[in-house]
Length: 121
Image (cartoon, rainbow, N blue to C red; front, side, top):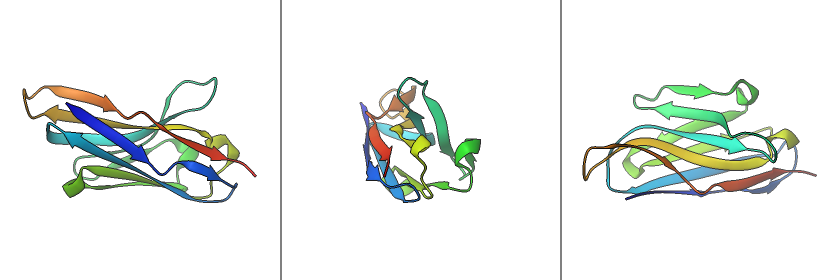
């Protein structure tokens, strides 16, 4: 069984910063990629940023230059540093991991429960 636990969400004023964390635990053999998605009210879930094995990163155009994804492979943890936040960044942010289960070598696409980020004055 694999668990992803997010933390770091909250209320921030426009122009402010937040740092999200997501720790993966459980029966993990290897992690191919970890990333962040978000879902705003009335909208579909969308990719924010992803980091794959080797360290390559990819960002949604709307967050490029403002958000930075990073990871601590020893801790199976991924971070999302969010700067210059805008009201339109308000959403529930979900952690995602593409990994291999150590029990049976099956590929798993795991999700966290989400953390709410509200950008408002």
